[in-house]
View 1 (cartoon, rainbow, N blue to C red):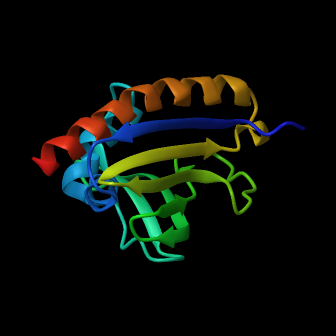
View 2: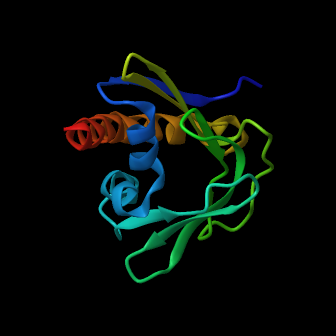
Length: 153
């Protein structure tokens, strides 16, 4: 079965340390994570971002909507974590590459942010979910870019 991933990248005029903060600090990631709520409750990501640590997508009232675990981390370079919507009945089987992966590559204070999300092939109607997620990332990535570039000053 062919794997189904969202695979996108964006160039950001800011160093990787700033992009990393926009992705990982709750006070910033709530501004882009809201795109995943599709008009529902706003939420942000909380984690210590250490290998094996939990990742919680929390609503404004503190309710956990999505949870996962950090499966790979290299500060300012790589972050991968699993995602599981706690409202779903069954937890799908995941591999090491599943979930959301952020790869950051910096060159002369320019950072390429590359995201991978999937594998959607393990889900019923996986292509539909992959396409819907790709549309969300098309909104998220420009937001992350704008925030990081504004923080750079």
